[in-house]
Structures are given as C-alpha cells and as structure tokens.
Length: 106
Image (tube, rainbow, N blue to C red; front, side, top):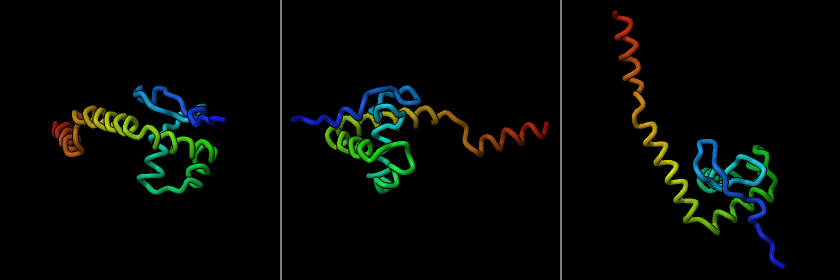
C-alpha cells in the first residue's frame, strides 16, 4: 500500500499571483510553513494551534518540502527577488519626509 502525502498539497497561485505549493483547502503555502518551522524554529504544535491546520497538514507540508526542496527553494527565491524588485522603486522614508516638508514650505 502506498500512502501519498501529496493528498494534502496542491499547486496554486498565492495571494500575489506567484505559483506556490499550498496546503489543500487553505491559502497557506508550504513555503510559509517551512519559514515558520525551519527558519523561525516555531514548533509544529504552535503552527497547528495558530493556523487553521491539522498536525497531518503541517507534517505533510514539511515532508513535501523535503521531497521537493530544490524546487520550493527556487520558488521562494524567485518570489523574494520579485518582491525586492517591486519595492526597489518605492520612495524611502527620507524621500517622503522631504516631499512633505517641500509641500509645507509652499
């Protein structure tokens, strides 16, 4: 008998329109669970209690990540690069302050 973890995971678009692997029936991505657990050291219990996820969904997301780590890491890197590029043209806080001061002096 073969049990498929993929039953808990699906490929979809995230809230910004980027391709992502998400927990089926939610909008929570595998990458988000990875960041919480692997990078932030959040316990699985905390994730399951603070997100609308079962323990099975959290473990499935982590198992899916480790089975597809290179692809998901690439997707996370692409998303970060896209977000960095999108915000690169935003004014800094100093720019905004200067604009406000310039308007006040008119």
